[in-house]
Amino acid sequence: MCESAGLGSRLREFCIQSGAGPAVADAIELCTVEGFNNAAEHALGNDSTKTITVMLEFVSGVVSVAIQDDGRAMDSGRLESAEMPQPDPKDTATWRDRGRGLPIIKNLMDHVTYESVGGHNTLCFRKHL
Image (cartoon, rainbow, N blue to C red; front, side, top):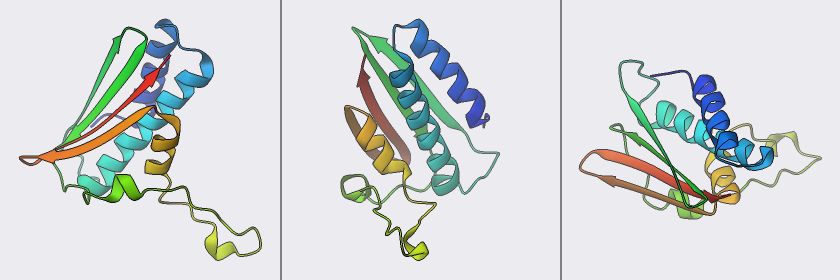
């Protein structure tokens, strides 16, 4: 596995060179790093001997990212039910520092899908520039 920080900076540079503005490039970088980290932690259990493949495509003003792993599949309804937690400013128990990755990806990207077929998991998302 590569470092997600290095992945993010290389991806951001690609987006800028492809014509994305800084805010869009930041969003694509954040979502890719979130998806990569989710795969590393949840699907692969942070096993550094396992591989995560990140594929990037830029066609007709659309950046598409696919993140693939061969680890434990995500529950089929998790993507659809992912919502940004709403903390209560007066109750620190509601200030979650986890569980925001999928809601961030859903909110920032134009289209998000997830599938697990034959032991291969793929999170895909697209953003129009």
